[in-house]
Length: 256
Length: 350
Image 1 (cartoon, one colour):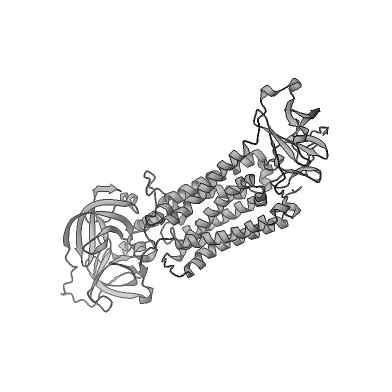
Image 2 (cartoon, one colour):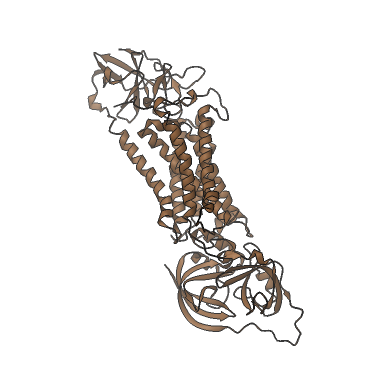
C-alpha cells in the first residue's frame, strides 16, 4: 500500500494554474527545454564529419569538351588539350540526376565527339554531367585518325575501400559515401552513373578509380550489395588517359 | 474533461504547452541549420538538403526520447505532471517533425531517379541478408508508420471508440516505435566510420536515459506498494487495508490486490470511499490524484469522479468501479470484489 503525499504539486490542466511547488519549476523546465533543444541542435550540427571537397564547378558554367568517347565499362571521354585542360583529361560521363548516358553514346564509341555539360571535381576524379547528346565532331577530316589513348596495365592489385557512385562522391551530394547514402548510390548505379572505388591507399597517386567487372564491362546487379561497405577485392588496374580502371574479380571479394 | 467531441479542447495550459514545444523545435532546427554554420570554425561542407534531413531526423529522435522520459519523470517527481498533461500534442508534433524528415529524404536521396521515390525507397537497397548495408530505412518506415497511427488515433474519439484499455495498449506501441528509431539510427547514421565520439553520444545517451529512468521509476513504484495476500483475508472476505489515520484528507491509499488490480481508498471530508485506481480516460493512476471540488481527480488529465458512486459529475458520463469499505475501530477493511461502474456505496464515516 502506498500513500499519495502532498510534498509535491498537483496540477489540473483545465484549472489553468500551477500548484505552488511547480510555479517556478515548470517555467524553468520550459526555458531549459528550449535552450536544451537549441544546444542539442547546434551540437548535432557541429559534430558532423567533413564530407570532403567534391563539388559541382558551377562557376565554370556549361563547358564544351571535344575528345574521343569510350562506352565501356562506363561512358567516358578523353578530352583533348584545351584552355581548361591543358594536358587533356579523361572525364567520366553521367546524365542529369541519377541517370547515365549509355543510350546517348551507344553509337559514338571510339569517335571524336563534342559534348557539353557541367563539371564535378573531387581530387583526381572528374565527371561531366552531360546536358545534351554528344555529337560527332564535324571538323574531323575523314582521313584523320582519331584514337583513344592506349590502355596501360598497372598489374594486379588487392585493394581495400568502398564502392560509391561516381557522381555523388565527386560532389553531387556531400557526403556521397557511407551506409546512410547506400540506397541513393544504388539508385545512381541502377540508373547508369559510373561507379568508383575509393581506396584506403592510393594507387600511383589515385585514390579513386572507375570500376568494371573482371572482363572490363559494367558491374552486374550483384555488386549493389557491396556498395557503401568496406570491402577488400583484387583485380587488374589499367590506366586509360589519366583515369584508372579497376577490373574487380568477384571471386576475390571479401567483406571487412 | 469534455462531454462532447471537439477537434481539440483548448485551454491556457495546452496553448502554453504547445507554444513552448514549438519554440523548442524551432530552437533545435535554427540551432542546427542557422546558428551552427555561423560559428567560427564550422567547416562542414554537407549539402543543405542533407543537413535538413539530419536536422529534422535528429530533432524527432530527441523529441521521442524526451517524450518517453516524461512518464517516469512525473512518477519520480510530481512537479513534472504538467508536462504529462498534454503529452499527446507532444507525440503529434514529434510525428510531424518525423514526417518532415521522411519527406526531405524522399525529395533528395530518392529523387532525380527514373524510379518513383516511394518505389526507390523500397527497392534501391535489398541487402536484407547482411548486417552492414542492411536497408536501415525500413526501420524508419516502420517507426514512422507507428507514430502516424498513434498521432491519428490520439484524439478522444478514438479513445472512446477503442475503449481505454485497447487504446492504451495501442499507444504503448510508442516504445516499439522508439526501439525501431534506435535501430534505424544504429544501422544508418551510427555506421559512419568518421563519426566522432561526441556525435555518437548524441544518439546513444538519450536511449540510455530513457531506459534508466524507466527502471528507476519502476523500482520507485514497487517498494511503496504492498500486495495484500489472500492469506490476509479475514471473515466475509474483507481485507484489512490499514488504519484510518494512514490516509490524509483529500488523498488516497492504493491497495494492490492479488490479481494485480489496484484500488484507491480516498479520504474526503472525514469519510472514506474506495474506487478503482484506473481512470476511465487513459487508465491514469487515480490514487495519485486528489479530491478537488469533492471529486476524485486524476493526476494525468484532471478527469473527475464522485467518490461515493464513481460517476463523473454531469454533464460528463464516465463511470468507474467502486468498492465496499467497512471500519472496525481504527482499521479499514475492503471488500475486494469490484462493483459495476457507477454503483453507489455509502462512504465509511470516520
